[in-house]
Amino acid sequence: MPFLSSLLRSLAIVAALLSAPAVALAQQAAEEAFTRFGADSYSDTARAIDILVQSAHPQAAPIIEALAEGRLLAGGGTVAVRTKEGAFLDARTGQKLASEPAGTSPVRLNNNVRRVIQGALGGLGLLAADPARRAAAAEAVFRARDAALLPVLESAIARETDEKAKAALRQAQAAILIARADAPPFDRLAAIDVLRERGDQDALAALRSLPGDASAALKEAQTRAISEIEGKLALWRAGQNLWYGLSLGSVLLLAAIGLAITFGVMGVINMAHGEMVMLGAYTTFVVQELIRTRFPGLFDWSLAIALPAAFIVAGVVGIAIERGVIRFLYGRPLETLLATWGISLILQQAVRTAFGPTNREVGAPSFMSGAFELGGLAITWNRLWIIVFAAIVFMALLAILKLTPMGLQMRAVTQNRRMASAMGIRTGRIDALTFGLGSGVAGLAGVALSQIDNVSPNLGQSYIIDSFMVVVFGGVGNLWGTLISAMTLGVANKLLEPYAGAVLGKIALLVFIILFIQKRPRGLFALKGRAVEA
Image 1 (cartoon, rainbow, N blue to C red):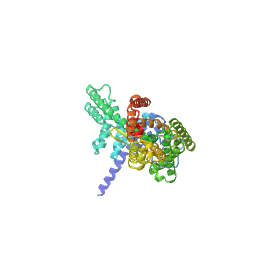
Image 2 (cartoon, rainbow, N blue to C red; image 1 turned 90 degrees about the vertical axis):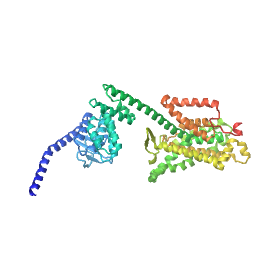
Image 3 (tube, rainbow, N blue to C red; image 1 turned 60 degrees about the vertical axis):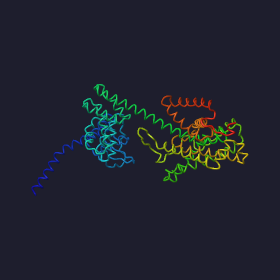
Image 4 (cartoon, one colour; image 1 turned 120 degrees about the horizontal axis):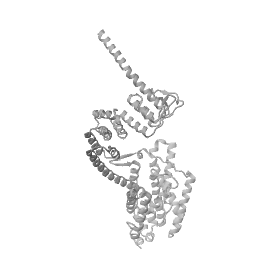
């Protein structure tokens, strides 16, 4: 036993002596990397990244991550990492420093260095314990296409057990192999099949990296794969434009549905309708500011709190406008138009005086932030929630008009004002409540629009013309017509944009509506009744 113990100690000493040169070489290489970081040269920075990865330096990952985010400082022989919390660490050891090192500045980057960083981070994460991190690292390698990482990829594929991560690793391998002239033809054909199955824009770019001197079989396979991917992407683009159209249609519906009520019942051309939308957006801003300063834990509930507040504020202002100005101008459409236009200018200037002319920030709750992918569609949560909200508002208004006494009286006044008055309906009261309801709904639209547009005194002006187009095209006072009109115009606008541009597309729609109104003056769905048909 003493002999065995002595032998083990001797072997340990020999192993330490043999490994000492390797450790020394690794330390020397790492020191070279730190020297290159301080050279303020893009090529030296790129080489320093490669050295850190190859030497397996224990601080390689945090150093390269800090470099990518502009938090790596170098100068005067010192290299330091500024943490996200503002502390400073020695890049060589990871130990905390007392203060920012003197004479240091952020290491500069260019596009080539960023590509090297992307590949290095991918290479460091390929063998991570978390499958999601391995998949993300493989995606980074796919974009960087660093041929030096091919052996690491092959090793990672051989040991990978997670199917999603393995697919990402194979795609990264394919993106590298297809551009290598020395790769076996069979492997490159297999790489083309892998990229064809991926089928996105990045795969298309990787397929086009096939060298021009490739064999005829490879070029034929490349052409077929590119044609298939382009056809698939064209369909997804059409689907994405359709989604954008539905999103725009929901915004137009929210902005126009209140106008459909007031215009339909009262026949008033309300040029101040856009300012009701603006008041709803500014109410949202005020509510969020109060929550930020006094109840920050309730921020995710800020929109739920702002909805009734915006409805009340815009509704009360609407009733005041109707009682104070509009009721004296019934039957005089030109004077009503001029008066409401003047009111819109007054409201805009009042908001400028109270809040200033600059845009105001309205934050998004956590459940409305971010996006997700559905096949080849990119869907943002805020747009999805606005579509849901528009549907809820539409159904609520429909229920009010069909199921409540007020809705019955509103429909009666819309169809025949004189007969409704003769039957004992107080048409003046209905006018005031209708104007308040339409203005309140416009305030709700302002809450929704605050999540996707700039909150400024000019917010309402961006939607007033579109709102009138929707109402006139759908049929004055008809909610179903407003819904179909908003969705039709929204989808048509987005489908025309790729071909005609945003401005020409909108002009084409305006010309179409003018021609359509010549044939059907009452819109798609005209209201019926003795008064409206007279």
